[in-house]
Image (cartoon, rainbow, N blue to C red):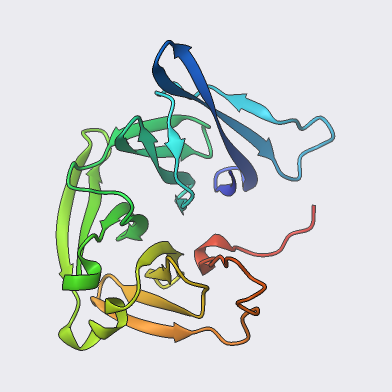
Length: 228
């Protein structure tokens, strides 16, 4: 999986590639080998993919990435445990921290909350309208604070009929929820600060008989168009 990050100090854009392969170094024990590669966009002719030493346990990254102030954040699995991985676009260093134990797969996602990275856990969203928000307060000490958000009863009908997944955030800080099991015709935008959800209908989508899946990109994934 490849993602683009921005180095605000040197005003550079870098492609970060996360590669994972299976390995059986010990008999009867399943392991993975993970690598990180970085490519500088717009560099001179000598620019090459550079392998970055992880300095962290091998892990299987999830697809969603959130960029905040020159740092790329994503969730990953180390064996059966979730971790939060942060890649510094400037220094190209990686840090890994454990996430709270009360977070379960697959109802999990990332968002920016008050300038900090946050993990959303929502196993009870469909039947109770509950979202648990975990925000990193102190990265050095791996301290988190939690907040429980409950949808207003008048909005419960929007989540009762669909299994949703976090697909990104908008530039206004709204979390994008997309249907997990169906072709994409609606998305839901959830304002963490106002605890308010709204439904957005997508028109002109491809024929459902021809399209097996769709993807959603939040506006925070796009800065501008540049020619290299």
